[in-house]
Length: 418
Image (tube, rainbow, N blue to C red; front, side):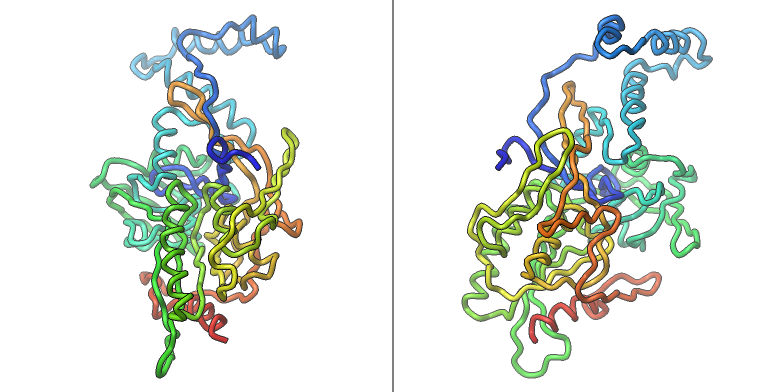
């Protein structure tokens, strides 16, 4: 088993590098890796040395660089540092993998803030779907949700500038901004465009929301069901999870609840180790949770290595099209071992693993290093996971999901009480 203090796998949904309207993170199954050796970007690399090693003549690069310096009409726009970062971004972008990307120091800090639950923006998890910027999910009580943004909306323009051809990094930089400022989005839903103006705010992202819900048509004495909403797999998730689970365990042992609904709707993913840690709460020691396969390194099996506290509690898992990456690993493992029924809609479908590397000088690189496989051999990339019970929440335009309109949760509770 890899040392998770050094390496964490980061999963982000198949279209997603999640940005809470302010950062990148979604759906990325992430590996937070030990720092690479610090490197300096001061001065020019030695073209001769690079040519000897890679058989690449960098003369063309430096010719273009020098020509811009001499010829470009607006000398105020020539920023060597920005040009340098731009060159690296272009190199990485040539791989045509939306989950492999270079981060400037500011962008790298923002990415880490997101996974730590701290960010500024509109509170929307974004991704790429068929080359288009797509809302994976608005965060609960966020400016995005309050403005009426929904999962599946396409973002066609930001401040009246087309997003055609944009990557997630570009989108993030345009949408995030100072608290209290406004961003105008042109969205598309069901083939129709509409515009929204949203005020940016500080977004605090908690991993866990725990409540206790009753069956709506219950008469007489009815035990509630623990409803644990898992929003992401971030830096604080395991600690928040342990606190919530301890509370659930006491109520379960005292027969105060009938079971548990694990709600991973609109969960974009995050750290791979989190999915393994949480799976251990429900599955026996030694069970395979996920297999990582790579052509660049040895394949690795992630198995349960701790004793869970909820091994026997009746369990139903809620998923939808915003459930991605690490959320799909956890849901898929529970499905494969028949530990829980899945209710809701087909999940997002992201099956790749990224490493988040610090390159030095504050810059970072997220690089796709592997694909992940569920215990029974299923690779769900671009396919998603089909629920055992398919049911869709019907929300009319302009309204948000409430307990009264949440038929998916109603079905989950119904299955537990059977």
